[in-house]
Length: 255
Ligand SMILES: O=C(O)CCC(=O)C(=O)O
Image (cartoon, rainbow, N blue to C red; front, side, top):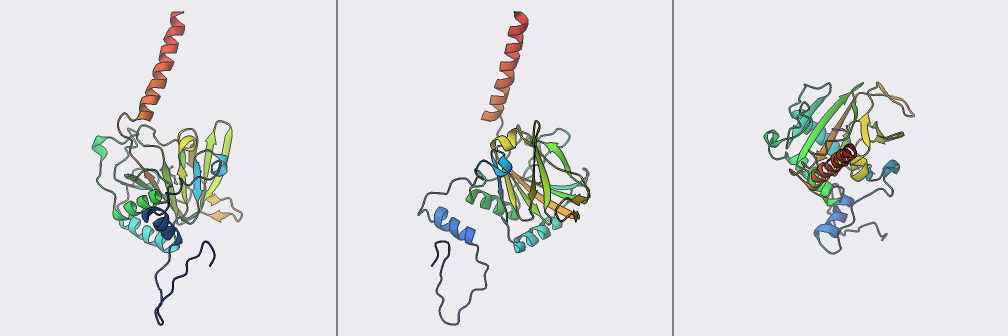
């Protein structure tokens, strides 16, 4: 038997029809059964595309799971006040005020989102269970402009799952530009520099460059986040840094 294979002996006449999920089995053995310490947080060495803190994992979902998820999402209610359609779960993100707040709590995540959130934690892709999900639907030319997810609304660790089509995402920091294809069924996780220093965007265009060049139809992304606790360390740190800057400025003025 190879190291990465499992042999199960069945009684004569028995057959297995259930899909065997090797990743879930590995997690059961290494995490739930407690026989071995939990594996370290999955990280692409040096970061995917050379971006520190960026992690990419193809085939996070199987084709059947992807299909089921698209069905669940299409049965949900789309919000149509942006160019692209969105759905919010857990907490509503207020695009005008550009934040989540105590009044924007929607309730617990639906089952499908809780299960995926748990898998992200089990696979050490996220450090804590997410409590907010935004579903984005992009059709043809639609995209999302470059941005950093709000640091005062969301914690470190943001997971983006891609469904239906494989489209490129562009990451930028100053003069640097990196482009990666988010394949359908993959997950991309931003932590550290990739989450706080780099911007990310989905270009608005009709075709994916390829090769082969492909006409875009529809991509759905599921973004999993943890809403930041009020006054968490990072907020205080940012406040502290601006206080320091203000203090330095007033010292310069008083000289
Ligand atoms: O489409 C994606 O995968 C990313 C979406 C995104 O950047 C966002 O919701 O802030």
